[in-house]
Amino acid sequence: MSVRLSTRQVGDVVVVDVSGRITLGEGSSSLREAIRDLLAKGNRKILLNLADVSYIDSSGIGELVSGYTSVTNAGGQLKLVNLTKRVNDLLQITKLYTIFDIYDNEITAVRSFSG
Image (cartoon, rainbow, N blue to C red):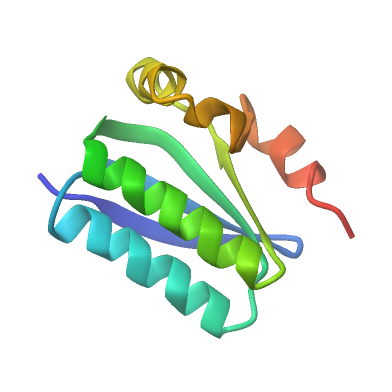
């Protein structure tokens, strides 16, 4: 099973619901393309909902960092919400927990975007 992405608008924030596996190949490239498309359409407030991500490998982690960098460089914000224990542990181990703004619930996450 690979990754599935769906987007929805909550105010001026685009929520990307990610489910499945973010791994080398199709999973990570789908995420990259989705973020690139959102930026191209002028979206600068992006929230990745990772509640249904069953697995993420080093390539998937790389895509999260790459997406974060792309959005930040475009003057936007990329935040994470609803991490599974596995993804949370992985971000802790890799010390990336300190880079991302991470939230436990969507309402708080959406409200955290400035402007």
